[in-house]
Image: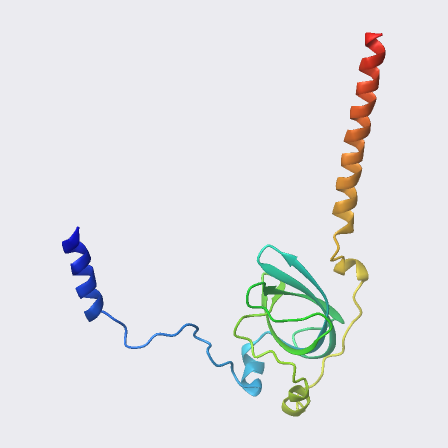
Length: 171
């Protein structure tokens, strides 16, 4: 066993990489270049944040859209461990569309400095935003919660009714 450990140690000395990186995106792209790299570029305010699994679900009110987004509000997913978005904060977002969902990637050059957009994207045409039905953004999940509550109430009432019926039959 000692020979194997010694062999692995010696091999690791000679097989070490010349250079390693924690992230391939250690430095985000400049704003001008990022426009081409991402599916959506917009200025928006985070109105609500819900936490599910390892994701943060942001409800973003879109102020200006320069690329990709055509509605006044969108849902954006962000990793819970590295996502830095805060409620009621305004950002210049750079997003990708994956499986029909807007994703805020780790390497995105998203910033609080929304004035960059006016300066860098002055030559781009701003997208006219369309209203979104409020039912699309039911972030509280009130319908599923209501159905579960009705089901539980029905079970409790049925159990109580059966219990009372059994007591009457014993008398």
